[in-house]
Image: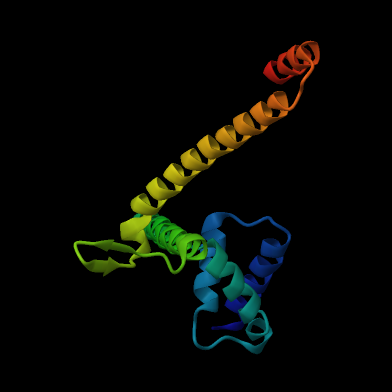
Length: 169
């Protein structure tokens, strides 16, 4: 590069930093700084101009489309991975809850012991519901008997009627 061209490029660099260059002039600058050999006065500006060049160069439209498609696919893959992870964790959490609540439980059907908690969960819950119903029934019977015992031990008929009214409220 001769001295005249070097001076011209130096002035163009000054205009570039003053924000006075056109996009065509900037493209010309970037092209100059991509050369293997530059005069010493321009060589010190190479890293700066290469940085600006890398920021301003437009990528081909096809590359943007591929990038958008890749991003969409990566997003879909991430979403799928998240959903699968949640499903696996949910299943694991349910198994842990079953083990914590019903650990050691088993059912014998047709002479076979079944201790797979997920397989016998419905049976366990049915037995627990039956036991709650029986317990409530037993509580009512005990209460009814206790009330009757109290009433049977009251000899005064007026007092007995009064206590019976209070118990029925």
